[in-house]
Length: 137
Image (cartoon, rainbow, N blue to C red; front, side):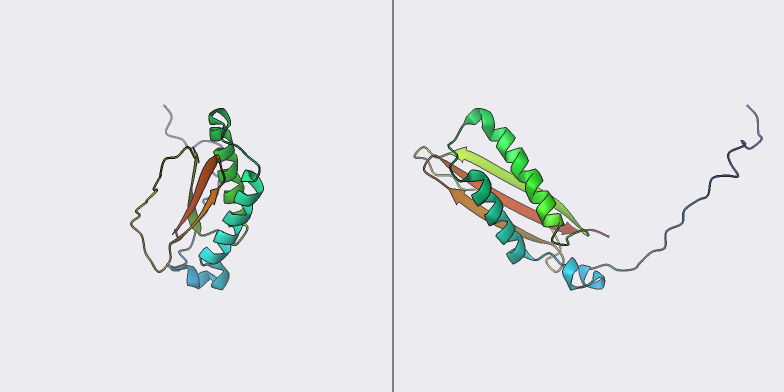
């Protein structure tokens, strides 16, 4: 091996990022905060649009939930939540006389993180959408 620097070494420039020292969404303005009431409205609209008139089909259920989650991710990001990591959980099931209870627990900073949840129910199915937003720097 040669100890000489390569011909390309002088052409590469190192990018140096400065620390912003902004540790909460308020530093980026009021629109950077997670707003659960606006996200709930988006959830409600997407659920109504996607699930209205649907009947439960176990073959299509995974495909439907994946598309709902992708659609929700795009629309929630468009609300101005760029500084949040989104975790979207969509549960779709058949309604056949049984009861279902969904719960979740998270460990987070209550001042900067948040969640929104919506529920859709028809005669043959139920769908629960949960969006968890965790602030990151």
